Image (cartoon, rainbow over the protein chains, first blue to last red):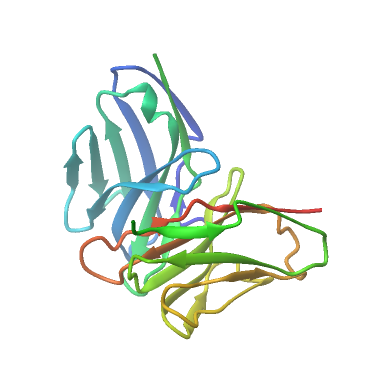
Length: 112
Length: 114
């Protein structure tokens, strides 16, 4: 049973425009959410996180929004750059234990 | 430099053989994790450990075993009981609480079993 879902397997965006990657979760016990970026044959690298007590967190070009009532989070990348082309995973941590659950990933392609 | 080392990068084994994947970290992290990545499946948790000599099963532990004899090391053994062992295996580590407790990943090991 997939507790973290990324329903869009792929996304293409023009350079300079906004990329919006979406993630839904089902477990109301999740209290910490993260986004990772991954290139083929490499480990994921951490991008940005948000605690369940917040609804927005920004870091440079990256902003994560959390809507707890909808159990939905999104990652905004503005402006998008060709180097942003990668697979993006969202992840969530339950408030008990230390397990992190990952989505299936969205492959972002930024077109120059 | 602090980080996570996974070796080897590529591993080939014959069906029916057990194989052990290495994971070492020098980040002084308490928790360590093993994930498996398959196309279209995302990252699935195999095992995790929050403290030396203790570990818990993740969602897909069948056919795998682990040990945590040292804080720095968390080797994963893929046994012959694992039905579909060919995959990309990722090791990660994190603090248990406080700042920076997001998992930090190693470079991964690609295991091919034929």
